[in-house]
Length: 225
Image (cartoon, rainbow, N blue to C red; front, side):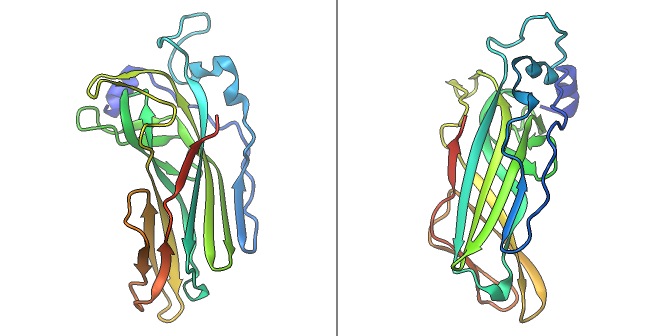
């Protein structure tokens, strides 16, 4: 779906209603609040579309606020490379805007909406999803990430695949990016880990050739509500 097509459907997205926390120093980086905000109130689905109060819902059921928790671990983390998680997430969700199953959502920390990659027919469009919390911890040479994504979802039927949309897509997938700084050459680099990798998957420093990180287990994805 193009931006113009999205505008024709008068799709609107939630404004920020939650105050974000500040990063915590040391080996733990905790950002954001996990508390649900006023977006949970039953009538606030009207933010998404131009439906005046009192009018009926354009879907069989009104959009509902869902929450997903993502977890990931990188092992063999060497202090030599100062490994850290990037504040972005690529996550597959069933999108009720373009009514397609398993669409990749591009989420950035601080953004109030995501971008759905949709398909060639619809084109990219905005989606009502955002990173609500992001926690990173280093312990025993293991770099852990816990992310929480809030998003709106409504029941729909994917006509192309002849399947119904789900709050958590049938085959959930996620890609997480990380960065590093090579102390030997004083240069930075980056890498990523995702659900469908052959493991163990090693990321080598592009400057010195040493292992910067190793992924031995796939990221976890679970629906919280």
